[in-house]
Image (cartoon, rainbow, N blue to C red):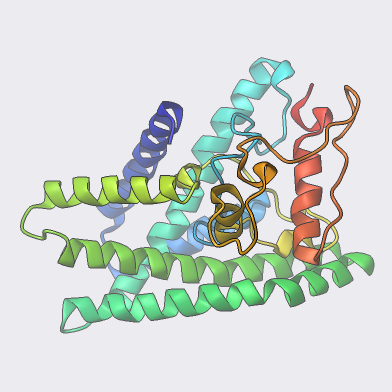
Length: 308
């Protein structure tokens, strides 16, 4: 994880904490407070057409080999060359959609605290872990049929229904992600040096940072882009940006039955760049999922996508 990533991470955490604690301070930490927070965040995100941003790791990951590390998409897609307008768009994207995503997470988390309260503290986290892992695994398998439904709705010009369907798909995904986060957080609080809160936090932070870096996904801890509901076509909006193990296998050279080829373990991207100003030549996809990531790579690398 680079120094830039560390600074970016601290900025993200600072933004999350004050929003979370403001809700706690003014509305309390009751089940009703959680429901209000969750409903308010969802409603406004739906109005802004950026509800899909509520999905987080492990359903969404970013590798340390991401070629667009410094490219951040804002809500209104203003080009950097726009000057003041780009600055205002960036501020709005962080202050509004970003804050609302935290509001949704906080609301769901607080509501789960009330719903899953048990006599033995650790049991509630076992329940959350079961829900979280179960839903996330199911969501991964549902990408294929969900993409088919989304593509079919688009083909029939039912754009609004397509957005509603995708938002429902991501709502379920959000429920799984928050349950898993809550479970891991709770286990760390109860099992990792519970008598020393500061040392426990430091140990968890270092362990998590090292583990994500070893898996070549240190950038996953950051929050960057603002995604827009319905902006992906051909069912691509229902695919999750997550290829952790496959990328780790290719870049590390581990688990390969045959000889390790230099192009596999090279940190440089394995693509052919065409003439200046043109898009890279596409690789031949082997599956609908790979086709999705290939199309996304080409779009992200186009000069027009970044206002160049």
